[in-house]
Image 1 (cartoon, helix red, strand yellow):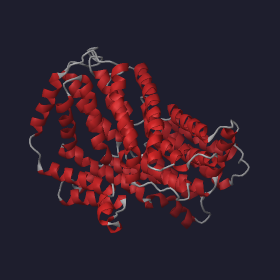
Image 2: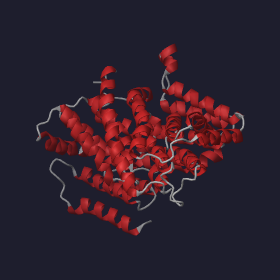
Image 3: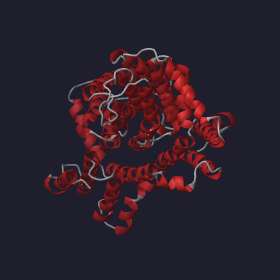
Length: 483
């Protein structure tokens, strides 16, 4: 435990509970739950303890204080209710499945394959990294594992093969550019699939609860909504960074040879890789609802059930062992902290706190007299750029998403349009800083990009991404009939 961040989080929680008066229109129970919630979020931001440990403490406090019920037996059931959320298990199981990409070497094979095709120019390597990210994203809910554990070592190996390193002062040769592409592909691909980053299922849950289940977003609906703006963003991102942060080495024919050598070292497709690839394809087909489209509703499956099917196949075939699953700490950690945050966010809504907070936001924004277009623009900009103050997308989403959605709907914004643009912004805002998400410290820590240039790149890409998703995205969603 880090004493100073822990003390700050505790002070904030106690101040809300005991010092700040309960506002008019808010029940004491809701206010006290807010104190626990904000204290937990402050602890996550300050990294007072591992997020899973903080989640367990939060669950304990909800149960022991009785903020949801004065009956102890009911209070503990409420505190543990998050573990019954199927979306939480979807993301945890998908993280377990993605372990197979690393264990079998399939993730590396995919990345080197793209580089062997596009690697004759530095710009081409950038596109190869982006396309590899996009290919792996649907079944890699840990964006940190995807961008940091799979893609980053490959990116570093390529940069090193050209003598580009921070230690030698040659980072601008190719390393800086490739590191920026490596990182900025991560937020875009995270926005494109529910299963591409851990907080996305949380957003789906918040949307359903915030609209009284009038809007329920499936895996296929999310992927379809993100398809066009996501592809446009993926195409533009390497080019924008190439113009703004040009590498001094433009031609890289050796990268193609390097990738082909790596593929030769991997050898032919092995049995576990073939099984992993088959499971990959099966998951995408079932999540996208293809069997249901062809054979009817009887072939429609719940997304979490599909994930369980994929994991079971990998266990039965021996691609993954139960020991592999037990060692997948990220998955179990994610299930734990997700359960705590979803539970608290859910009861803040049930106790009326979210409604009260959205009313405050609604009153402030309503005073500007904006139309719904202006309302969406203002809400998205405030929501997006406030991520400068967060070191966790999950904490940010949990703290702000539901209230901003409710306020915007109350001010006349089309509900699904607002829900989508806020949802995709929740991933895209990861581009801003070197601490915005777990992938950032890994890539930034390699030293290829200075702090100042990283933040400039983040600002440039934030403007580009907002323009693409707000412009192309809004047009695409209109075509789809979403607003």
